[in-house]
Amino acid sequence: MAQKLLKSTAVTGGMTLLSRVAGLVRDILFARLIGAGVGVSADAFYVAFRIPNFFRRIFGEGAFSQAFVPVFTEYRSKRSEDEVSAFAGHMAGAFAAILFGVTLVGVIAAPLLLMALAPGFIDEPEKFDLTVAMLRITFPYLLFISLVAMAAGILNTYGRFGAAAFTPVLLNLSLIGCAIWLAPHMAQPVMALAWGVFIAGIAQLLFQVPFLLRIRMLPRPRLKRDAGVSRVFKLMLPAIFGSSVSQINMLVNTVLASFLITGSVSWLYYSDRLMEFPLGVFGIALATVILPSLSREHAAESPETFSRMLDWALRWVFLIGVPASVGLMVMAEPMITTLFRYGAFVEQDVVKTAQALVVFAAGLLGFILVKVLAPGFYARHDTATPAKIAAVAFGANIILSLMLVWPLKHVGLALAISIAAYLNAGMLFLRLRQINAYEPGTGWWWLYLRVAIASGVMAFMLYSNKGDLSLWLAGDVYERVFRLAFWIIAGFVVYVLIMVALGTRPAELKLDIKALEK
Image 1 (cartoon, rainbow, N blue to C red):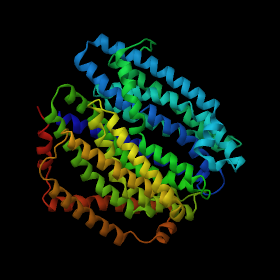
Image 2 (image 1 turned 180 degrees about the vertical axis):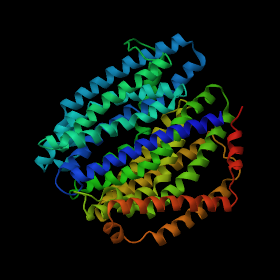
Image 3 (image 1 turned 90 degrees about the horizontal axis):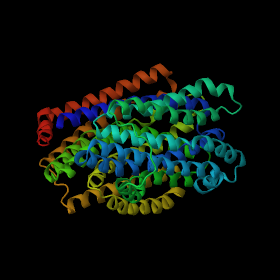
Image 4 (image 1 turned 30 degrees about the horizontal axis):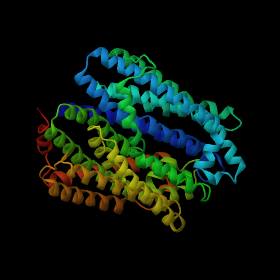
């Protein structure tokens, strides 16, 4: 089991890394095409993209996946193959019908939706009209990508993580293709990006079909009452909020940022994208892999293995999450300059985006912890507890955002989200301990100390040698890329060497992993 977990995490993380790299290429093209602080195109597109993306994370990889996977895993463990197949078909039929209705309402009511979610655009008719036009094109993405999430849940339960993890690459390729070949031929080039989102949704759904056929689990949608479907929707209702609180927080901040100067929404977008690079490559990959495994252990009534598996995952969170957070904070300006300082993306955009990235990066560990701790509840068919905890974190974010947005502008919004993430993670951890679902293993304080020392040494080395912003702005693209790659690799090497010097050995990690073996 342990080797499969490591392999699955590596495969999922590798595919996610490929997707994130394609996403960075995409964002570099976006920065060239529409910039951040110049004109209305950038803010208009990012709002039109963020709204369906927000609903996708609720209906797709958020609440639905965390409600569906545990129930589907239980069916696989305790029911016949015909019953599993029938459940998948009933689930697909009901889910698709609901998604179609939501999508139809979203397209028709796009102006009202935008008034509610980006009210600052109302006083700028050009920006408002452009955003509405793009939102009507991008909103159907919700239908396609949510069905993709169901397909991914099925494949992940069967241990097929690669196909589902690769799927986001298609979104980035579609957007890159439309930015290069379609945008130059349109009166408003940014509209090509909206069509890229729409095309990607169809491509991602069709991509799942051969993999589902290979495991003989391609759902045939049927509208029929089913006890398993009812359970999924019952679990999904509280999970809609609990699993999506970070996205809801970002949406709230988009609303507040829409009242700030033009460019604020885009600065938050670009900084959030870079912060989500390690979050997706590692945090979400790890959470995706452990949810089916935790669900199996819960169905098998193996609480000790359940706890050890969660402990193993949390150790990796600290081993990878802390240095990633520190690295992003120290190298924020070089990263932003190297990736985005081209075309319409000007020096002011670099500075403003880097300010937000530093604050987002400080909260990275909290974001990853939430992703890994929440499956500890979802695997136990408990979606209510994370929802209640998320409600507290959401309230804290609202209060902090309103307090910080005026003195700190867009940076205050990023700070509010980061603080709320740690509050969410802390309450999830304490609750798992209270219900005896998780018992930390030995050696945690020594792990904290080693990670802190190694990350500190790495940060000092990078900060002392990276140079100031003017040096990075003066370099050409090849010089920037080479220098950034060199210092990222150097930072990684220094961190690993210090960890080894402090006594960390592969065998130590294998001991934790072997504890999961039956």
